[in-house]
Structures are given as structure tokens and as C-alpha cells.
Image 1 (cartoon, rainbow, N blue to C red):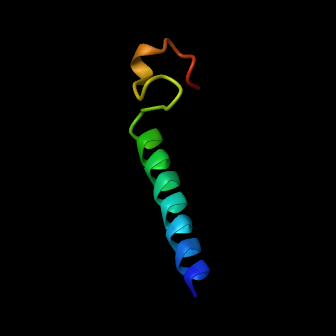
Image 2: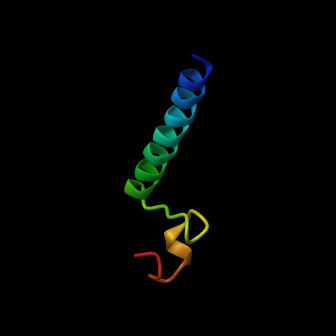
Length: 45
């Protein structure tokens, strides 16, 4: 039972991280450019 609970917590964290990355990408931010694509001179895409 403990393994299932820990697995569910890890899966929820992964889903939250992916959701956050997708949301930031739609706002024009990128992890590769310090979360600000306006400063990377087009190298983010």
C-alpha cells in the first residue's frame, strides 16, 4: 500500500511539472532561456 501511495505522489509531481512547463511555454517562456524567450535572441525555438 505504501508503494502505491508514493508512486501516486511521484506521478502527481511529474504531471504538475509537465503542466507547468506547457503553461509557461504558451506564455512565451522557456526553460532553456532562463524563463524569458525575449532575452535569448531566437535560440529558444
